[in-house]
Every structure is written in C-alpha cells, then in structure tokens.
Image (cartoon, rainbow, N blue to C red):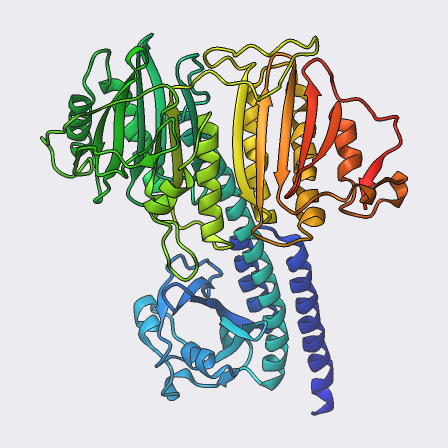
Length: 600
C-alpha cells in the first residue's frame, strides 16, 4: 500500500472499529425490535460507507426471504417489505450458499435481480452482502449497496461487514427472544383472564340439601375448554342440571361453551319439560353456531320429593346408575342428535324413579375415551365396574372415576376435556358395630344429609400416582364437614397423605398395585380416618420412638400424625393393619410437645 494511503486506511479501520463498538452498545441499549433494525441499517450505511442498506430475514412460516427494513439513498426508511427470490438474486445466492459476496458491477453479474431497481427507480452499482448466522443456522442476509467515494466495495469492507453482521445477528436474536417473551407474557395474561371468565360460567357451589347430594369435577385438557356443567334450583322441589361438551378444544370451544350456557339459562323456566327445553336450546344454537361446532349435552330435572329424575339427551354419553345395593349399569335413556346441527328436532324425555341410596353419574367423553399412550381407550364398561359397590356420597363416585381415568392414562397428557357430575338421594348413615359416644351410649343414626354426619369410602392401590386423587377426596370430605376445622384442612390432608405414604413405603415395601381402603367418618363430635392395608400383621416391635433429628426422609409420618390428630391407633388384623386417625371438631392443631415417634 502506498504511504499516502496509510492515513486513509488507518482512518477507515478506526471508523470500522467504532462502528463495531456502536453495534455492541446497541445490543444492550435498545429494547425495541423495530428500533433496533432501523439502527442497524443506519450504522451499516455510515460505517461501511454505502448509499443504501437492507436487512433481509427468513420468514420461518413461509420459508421465504423478506426485506424487513431498508434505507434508501436519501436515508429514508423503505416501508414496503417485498419478498426476495431465494434463487435468481444476490441475496438469495448468499443465503443459499452461506457465503459473503462482493459484487463490483451488479448488472454484469447474472445472479443480480433487477426487479427492485425497476420498481423503485434506484440504480444499483456495487453490492456487499453477507449471511446472518445464529448458532449455526442461517436467519437472513445483510447487504449494503453502492460504495461511497469509490467504485466498489473491497475485501477490507467485507471482513469488517462480516464482523458487523455477527454483532447485528446477536442483537436481532436477543430482541426476538425478548419480543417472544413479551408475547408469551401477554398470552398467558390473556389466557388467565379467559380461564377466569370461563370458570365464572361454571357453578361456584353446588346445592346443599338434606334430601339431595351433588359432586362435580372439571378438568380442561388446556387452560380453557369446551366442557361445562351447571345445577340450578328453580323451586324447592325442582332442580335442573346439565352437563355438556362442545366439539373441539381450546378458545373456540370455550367461547361456544359460554354461549351455550348463557342461552340455556334464558330458556329454562319453572315447569318446563327437559325435552322441550333442550329442543328450544337446539334451535337457538342452530341460529348462532359457526364453523361446524356442535354440542352434546344431557339436560335433566330432579324432583327430590319423588326421587324422580327426568333426562333429555342430545348425543351425549349415557349416565351410570348406581343402586343402593351396589349394582351399577347404564339405564335406557332416549337420545337424539347433538345440538346446533339440525334445527326443529324433537327430543324425548326419559323418566327414572330412584330410591334412597341411588346415584346417577354423568360424564363427558374425555373420561370414557381416555386412552393409554398405545391407544387403548378406557371405555364405559371399566367405569361401570369401578362403581359396582355401596356408595354413601357422590364424592366417592367422582374420585373413583378420576382415579380410574388417571391410572388408565398413565403418564400421558389428557387428550380431551373431562367433566363429571354425580348426584343422588342419600340414606341415613348406619353406626359401625359397637360404636359408642364418650358417655358409653350407642351413637344415634343421623337422618338426611347433615354435614356433621358423613361416611365416605375410597379404594385405591399402593401407587404414589394415585395420592393426588386421595388428597382431593379427603379435602372434599373436609369441606363438607363444617367450618370448625376449616383452618386445619391443609394439615389434616397432609396427615392422611403421610399415613398413605407410610403404608406404601413400609407396609407394602414400595410394591405397586396392592389394595388400600380409606374410610372417612364424621359425627357431631369428631372426624375419623380409617386406613386399611392387607400387607399381613403389623410387627409392633418395629414401631419405636426416635428423636426428630434422627428421622430420615420419608420417616416423618408418625411424628406428623401425632401432631395433627388427637389419637393415632394401630389395630392388627389377620391379613393386615387398620390405622385410625381421630380428630375432635373442637381441637385445633397444636405444636406438639411430646417426643416424636416414627416407623422404622
């Protein structure tokens, strides 16, 4: 290089270095994505010394190159965002070959695409174009056009521009990530609002009556879903219920669900037959349904004084009837097409006469069509088999079906929304043989569905995955038992959970699939939790006290139970052990001062 050129070369190198520093500053200083792209173009033109510049990025949705921002010869931002050919253009060649390119005379290069010049009236002379790589993947190209003060760009420009492009790529990807995080936060916030809105359409509480008991569960496959249920009393002896499923999942189904429930509440009036009500509902939905959505539903009316249930079904799963003697089967219920497809349909009403101790379980197809990862569906027969036993409260039905579905599905995600609604007519709870009050008198049989007197039963297996449903079952029981123990719900649930965990770990030595029975009992004085295993007689010599700081993880169960419950009693039976945990209603949990014990 001639000596006269040395000062000029040094100045150019210094300008290029300053430009790189400026880009590095931009990476940390600009938080607006569009503002960053414009700044990159400004610095590129100024540092490299070019008449115009453009940034072309790959649209991953269309797999096309798009000019996202450009500066023309006047420094104005070009607002149009044309597609750049991946074949038959300089930018396309650089992207496809992942190589930088210096083009001294654009119109002499066969790869040059002159269409842009024809559209804008701009005259392209020389081009410097470099690929943009992020973690080994190409995301686009950066180019400057028409070198200022000389005929063409040179190798020194190319080297500097490649370094500049790498910094620009880092800045672009950083801002893309930030923009994506912002969009995700907005989406989650909006989805949370949507979930709250949808939940507001579902009943917050179910009717509490002495002659009629309800339980329900709602599990959307996503944050929002298309399943729904409702129970509303139109009079002291007229209770309507509905359970339904909108075809599809996610936001469209959730919107249709909200519309469906709103319309139904306007339609149902005192004395209206369910068949007529669902026919009017169908007509209203046919006038409003879009994009092929439809609804399956079961709508019914309960007359508690007669223990009579009238049902109209529109393409929905048949309910399961559980008799007081433990029989379970699908009753014959007339069915018709789903709602929202054909207007003017007639719907028949089926009447079921129930007795005290009889229960009806309604569900959506997310339960019966739940499938294993291999594709095997659960089916209604498995559900019926689960309920073939004496039922004391609908919570037992809901929890048993939830556990059956969870165990069938395994670790796979749910493929559809799942909703359960169970109700029936409770019977007075019998006393257990030999039960007496503290003064030695037999416990009188309470009548009706008094929340002070409850008895529930749950059968499950020694699989830790089932404990979540056990906890929900116990919590539902406690919520029905009155306000005296509301402050201690969490500790009582935890105490029962620890007891179940001890049975699995110690009695069954971690073996999966072994039977466990949980009986929950409540009277006006206390709550009792009876846990029964079949692991053989308990070896009492293995129960011993230890200091708390000597207890290993998983061995805290007995210590915690003694703190939470007033009485912890083990009863050795021939084929296993019964653990009874008792808690007086008027006895809040206290910090234990007794020396803790644990199962070895």
